[in-house]
Image (cartoon, rainbow, N blue to C red; front, top):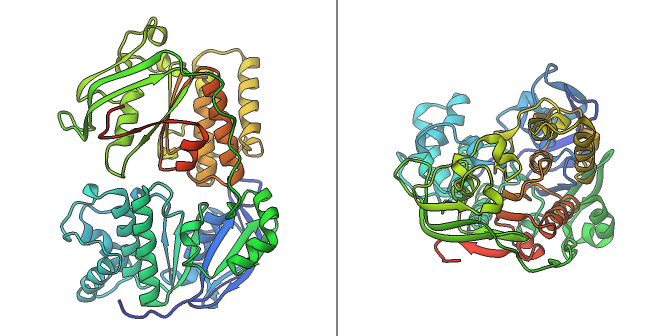
Length: 483
């Protein structure tokens, strides 16, 4: 790929406040990133990292979307006026897949920039080669794995020839092989093009040999800035207190289980699962979900983990075989979760989807946590106690009146977990429950899960997070292997 003209980025006491929020997402940010620098942007969940990337990309919107303070410049020009000089890859690759075919999807950004048609397709091929996504241009985007979709999103950005490449937690929901694929693709691109680079990531080890600088956002703007080794050596303890993931400082694990697992609550026998009737994505599954236990479902992206989770949760019909609830769980509702009404599911099986936006229902965080308890008809006093405890425990109390859609990805994840916990289900199915979390909120989430396990609930975690598997002493179930 041809060498690009790398861009500079400068924040001059810059800030942004979303129109529906009292609290500023970012304020007082001040730094300069020179052309070609490679920067890791850190900070606690909710510190404004994603907002800053969106600001650099010029996609925050106008005055009706929020209020800005100070200046944010790309190549000395206001970022909103330099749109196209920065290319942003979002955390969720599915959120950036726009068109049905690979070639058309990569070409989309170029078409919006008015690139001549003949040049577009040479750019598309160069970009796909740069990220090593070797599939036909006609390949259906829905047929790609998670790692391939992330490389597709990166290719779409590269085809636009930006001066700065922005990545927002690009590996959060990828399996270990996909993480390395994306990291290596980014490194190749940076080496080939010389583009300026800014990446937001909570799990930072994978990027430490790619970046040359760390900027840490906190209350009041930038709280640390410099070479990675120097920042972590001088400020490591302080940054860990703020919630940053710091090399050599692993998060605190809860105590081991208080007792052995109890009787099975859910049983899968020769189960086949799929999202299209008659088409199985995984089959031959035999699985027991005991009370007082945590089960981790692991497998590469695209193996059917999320589909299995939704089937276990009674939200998708089986393609073959059977999933049956034990009498103690099914009493009064029947043995098959897919036949249960939503109200019957509430206290029996709770579900946290991989994409938080797919289950947000209310206009405030507090209202979101109250949806389940209200459906159960709980008295006002009991509902308030449950909701207030979860808001405080998951550091959401200051956001109780905020619209959930304005929150960061990590904050949205905690809202959906809290909403599921508010109904106190006997079984809780969690799809990537710890994505987007800083070290502090990760610790608090895992402690809550461990408490549920020790109180006799069953947890099913679909996860690539090996640390959470170890922390919960989870039984591992890998798709394709018998439990």
